Amino acid sequence: MKINSLMPAVYCVHALLLLCVLATVSTASRAEKRVFDMTIEDTRINLVGNRDFHTFAFDGQVPGPLIHVKEGDEVTVNVTNMTTLPHTIHWHGMLQRGTWQNDGVPGTTQEAIKPGDTYTYQFVAEPAGTMWYHCHVNVNEHVTMRGMWGPLIVEPKNPAPIEKKVTKDLIMMFSDWASKWASKPGEGGIPGDVFDYFTINGKSFPDTQPIRVKKGDVVRLRLIGSGDEFHSIHIHGHIALVAFKDGLPLAHPYQGDTFVVGPGERYDLIINMDNPGLWMVHDHVDTHTTNGDKPMGGIMTTIEYQEVGTDYPFYEWKDKKFMPDFYYEASLAKPHGIHRSKVFKGELIEE
Ligand SMILES: [Cu+2]
Image (cartoon, rainbow, N blue to C red):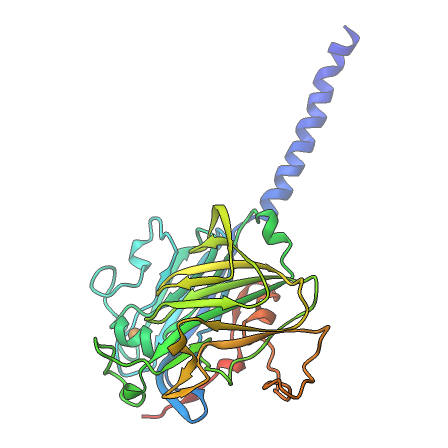
């Protein structure tokens, strides 16, 4: 009897505690409203050496700014078209539940944004994962060789255990360029084009940057196919685990050392940095490791372990000027928001 009479009081305390916990959880996971402004600008980008390319760059940089938000955030992006051609932005991977008219496809969900106009996109960031955004007007030209793409990373509300182990988060966007059209905006991107430049985040080797790690790091490498070709990415000295495809967690992650990334696809690799050395990372489609008609170039970089350093007479990058954030690794570690990077900034082309 005595115990029973106490029960309501105990329930009350439990109910209060539960309310407190729920209130805390809902505050922590409350959707944020995120408002970003972006422009589209005629921009001269240097891929490598003296190979320049006329692009329609988001905020004047290729890749475009990193948009880094949390699952469930309400995202608003005001886009101002400063070029002389129409464009849109498709938010690749976003479900757009109830907001289909923000999917960014001209002639299907909207009229393209005319030169000089500003257009506002509004959508909820779902699902979580490695997503990207790109123009959807004349994609054969604008996406393939005018640099109209950037990363959209949506952090999950409930990260998987494997994600929590990551110490370095990096983005690699692959793209292909036909130099025939470099200075002919509004043309190109047709069958028969010869792609002769290949880039990681808009740069070809040797103007790419090394991936700097230390033993014990757990790297998350987010591979994004933003060009028109397939890229067979080989990582020397390590076994990688493919944990996510198109941003979505795989029920059965699988291991490998070479991964084919097709146009539009994303693969998130988790790699334990357990083998100090200098290691090559490159496209195994061998013709993608050339610049113009010259090997070696294109899609190549290295992993540099802090433990072994870079001071070797044979190492091509021993005197390289290191530019952090080339893989958006510094920006990804910052609070959520829009992150521009001077590493990717081009030169405004005045008409
Ligand atoms: Cu466009």
